[in-house]
Image 1 (cartoon, rainbow, N blue to C red):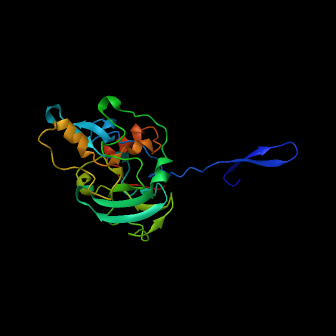
Image 2 (cartoon, helix red, strand yellow):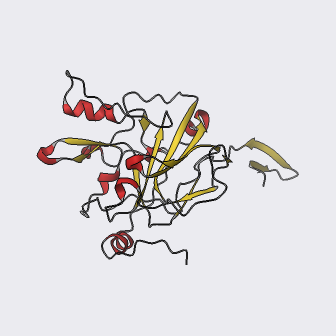
Image 3 (cartoon, helix red, strand yellow):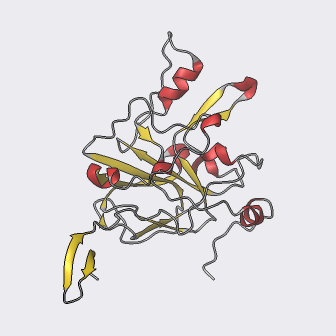
Length: 245
C-alpha cells in the first residue's frame, strides 16, 4: 500500500515491518546479452565483462562493460537516482551519457546473480575497483547523436526509470551489425583504463589492468534470456531500427 508489509490481525491491521523498495531500474526495457559478436558469429560471452575476447594467436582481450542488444533508437533509462555529469561524444565510445550515483544505492542494487561465462574469463570486477566508494558512474555508450531527450543535459537530476537517451551505433560500433548499448559502471567519469603496459607484466595481466576502475554490470542488470530469433532478425536480416509498435 505504501512501501510497507502489513500483518493482518483478526481484529486490527498492524504495520508489521518496513520493506525497502528496490532502487534499480533496468537500462533497457528488455535487457539481454548480445548473441552475435562484431563479426556476426554466435558469441554471447563476447559482450560480457572481463578477458572474454580472443585475438589472433589466442591472446585474451579485455572488454570493460556489458553489451546489451538494442536496435538503433531504443530508449534507455536511468538505472538509479543521480545526476547527469557528461553528455557528449567520447571517441570510440561514440555518444556517451554518464550518470553519477550514490555508492550506497549501487551497493543495495546487486542482484545476487552468478557469473555466466567464467570459463571464458568473465570476472566480477577490475583489480583496482573499490566497491566502497562514495559515488559511482554509470556510463551509457554508443548512443544516438541526433535523437536526444531535450531535458537531459549536464547537471540534470534524474530519478531511476527516467528516460535519458536513445541507443545507436556511434563510435567504433558504427561499422558493425550487432547494434547494442555498451554499459559500464566505473569509479570515474572517464579515463578508467590504464593505457601503458609495464615492462614486467604479461599481456594477460596488462589486459586485466586495462579493465581499470570498473565492475561487471551483469551483477546489477537483471538479464532476460537471449531472444535468438529477434537478434537474428536485427543483426543478420538488417531489421536494426527500433519500432515501438
